[in-house]
Image 1 (cartoon, rainbow, N blue to C red):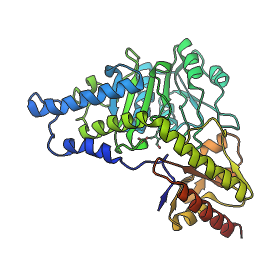
Image 2: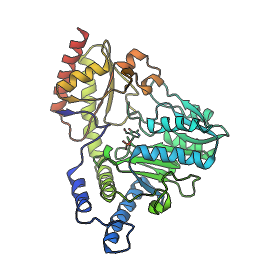
Image 3: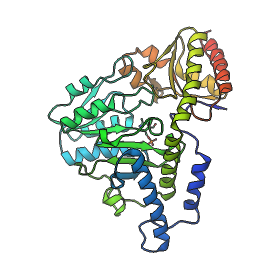
Length: 373
Ligand code: PLP
């Protein structure tokens, strides 16, 4: 099996599992409890919070542990809207559904939503964000790196625009955490998810700037300073911090290795298979991602044949009611429906090898040939 879907999720690192195991077994106390068992668990959460805050570039009391990136995005967008009561939401058209669908939900309460499209290279122009952010705007989200194309966005410039206009800016860092430096200073809130950097699924962190005008979504216990009730997922939180620390400490070496595999693959795929097109800016992207369209092929069929050959990749298209809709990211970039539907996303990780690249190129040539025939 060759796994090239690391943007969907990554395997749990052995060292992360080791760090988590005590909290799945012996140390089972509830961090809220007042006795020794609770204190032991609370100590682990405290230490994970300190590590996470340090890496995100914020204070420990600005970190809220969540179930992942979806909850982080929902909490930021809906929490700001609930506190504001009315207004406009500005999102890039290439955000993850965690943001796009949350904004759609807010329309029912009278909020106005404007989507800002990127250019053909997949990059959102800060001037377009500046035009969309008006006096009524209460929330803006433009992600750090896109999950389909890997294209990196000018988030510092967008953060500046929002800060000058006193608009709450959420930066989805799910695809960039552990790969690019995180800087809470450029935004009001930022979300990361452990399973994207070799940590456990169902564990994430949300930074929210101290003093931001935001309502909580999860009422209940006093966990997370009363903002997010619910018993802590202690092992998940410990795993998140361990995985993030690991990823950041090894980012330079891993990025170099992954980029070299990805670049070798792209070069060969584009050169050895006719009618192929790289989608999104070639240089300004995270090291793992290659999004390629194959003329005369349907991405879903190609994925199926590669799956049969033991290669795991992904399409950006969504399947609903038996019909596939082309990727909202590629279509927002201005690529036509045919090109968008013929795209596959290959995302490399630290466990891939050069030999696998050779095998994938071969499998790809065979699959494309079969479909085109
Ligand atoms: N945001 C982005 C950019 C993502 O790629 C994903 C997951 O694919 C999410 C948010 C959702 O994260 P989670 O799976 O932790 O809910």
